[in-house]
Length: 123
Image 1 (cartoon, rainbow, N blue to C red):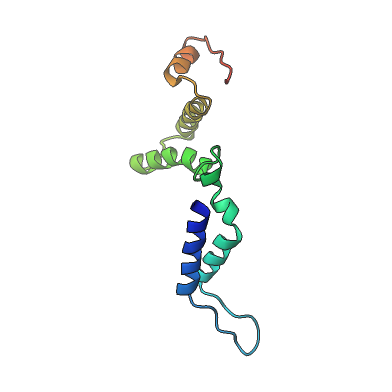
Image 2 (image 1 turned 135 degrees about the horizontal axis):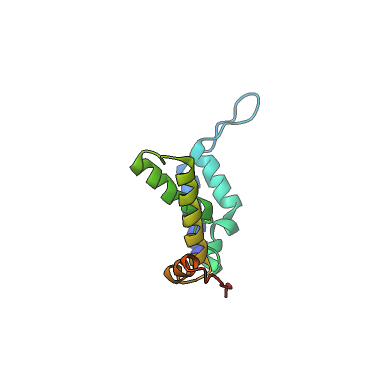
């Protein structure tokens, strides 16, 4: 099962990553790896949520996925020539992204927009 395998891997990490040395005064400084292990153990249910709940995506970073095409276009083109061009690009890609998220036919909806027949309801 996923949870026992996860716990085994975390335990192996704890065995591999040394415990912090206790200084004479103050708090012991942990390594970055040990800090990460502690967070993974503390937030186990959140880390494994995608494995147990069908509606949970592996990553929740939808905003980054939505921004990535614009950044790639900006890098390839070196920049947007005008602010208006960047705004138009953002508006079109936002529309396409929304249609995909609502499981709509993107081409049909773009056609409807361009012919003033736009009316859709998400299902």
